[in-house]
Amino acid sequence: MKNILCIYFTGTYHTEHLVNRIKEEKEKNGNFVSLLSVSSSADIKDISSFDEVIFSYPIYAFRAPKPYIDYLKKLRFRKETEYYVYKQSGEPFSYNNSSSCQIEKLLKKQGCHLSGEFHFLYPYNILFAYDEEWKKKLKEYNDYEMMIASYYTENHIQHLIHCSFLKKKITGIISHLQHFGAKINGPLYHVKKKKCSKCHLCLKSCPYQNISLDKKGYPVFHSHCAMCMRCSYCCPKDCIKIGILNSLKINQFTKANDKHKKIKKKFFSVYQKYIDKEKELYSAISELN
Image (cartoon, rainbow, N blue to C red; front, side, top):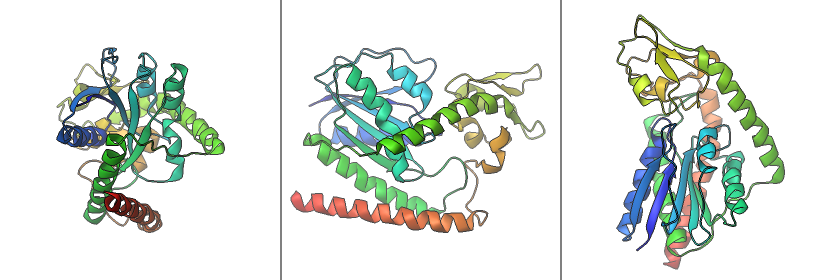
């Protein structure tokens, strides 16, 4: 039995869903799993007693969220521990492979190394909504990926995803622009006061306490935004405008439509190739077992 810690950051709760699946799968195999959610109020944890540590996060602008990396920088890693990445995004494209490079560097500085990484797929929380057909496909893909991850981790087989030096440099620039843009765009968020019910769900759930209230009880947004989209995506009244990105906003109640029909057609044709590839890998592992 292994003592496992999963350190995760979640925006619109997709990563939280993923880590609960990880916990369920790991505990099926007789392991004990603890979950640590990273936010501005998270305590620095001593992780020296764990046999395995899992890093789990949503990919933002091809990298792990900056507040998440800032938290990991405060931790002390143990050489004897196994380290894995379980990341998730709305697309399977190769530029996302660079998202774990910062974690690899942090581990290397303390004489540790990453043993494996696995990429899961969830619907976007911005740009456009996925229809039910594609949500089912993503679930199927994630089922395969979880079983593949279990095979590699339980058998201590290294599974690293390659990313070229050039792609790491390009995504590093994009990521820095995203961090800078968040500071500018965060204060541009605002609510439609006629629709806002003052439930204050956004205030209570913001992982980085970026929201306060004005004198009339309406939310006010500030500059330390993580761009996780939790406030706008989860708003029960869909009354939050997300600054210069508002034309790309979706809410949990947004239904798939033809607004981005051409984009989605090309997008999902590429997507299908990755799903088929994962099925082939799973079939090969099943034959080995």
